[in-house]
Image (cartoon, rainbow, N blue to C red; front, side):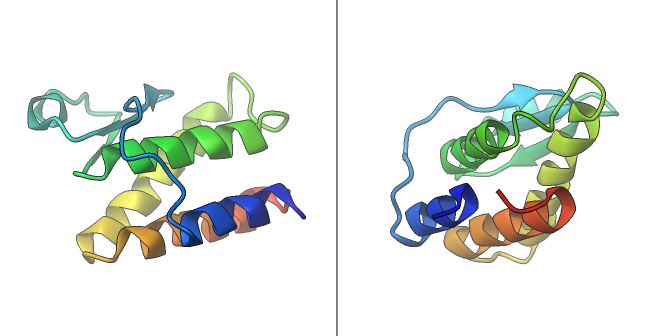
Length: 114
């Protein structure tokens, strides 16, 4: 089974942590702390959500899956693009499962099957 299929299965079964360190790096910040959201820099993509632990876990999983494709240059495209996708879905108040699966699908389209 492919890595992305395994990730989808974990998401569908709800097998992601409720407690996980918030992601911050390569111009992407995922947080549930409103103060951190307010302190963002212009070039940062900030995802503010009560689901920050699960969304941070998802980014970490995608990072591990695409580790061989991410480098010191394209990481400033890879991570913020995930944040933009998250923000777009969260604005529509979609369910967390739908948002996470959408992110996986879109990253697969952009970066290829793993």
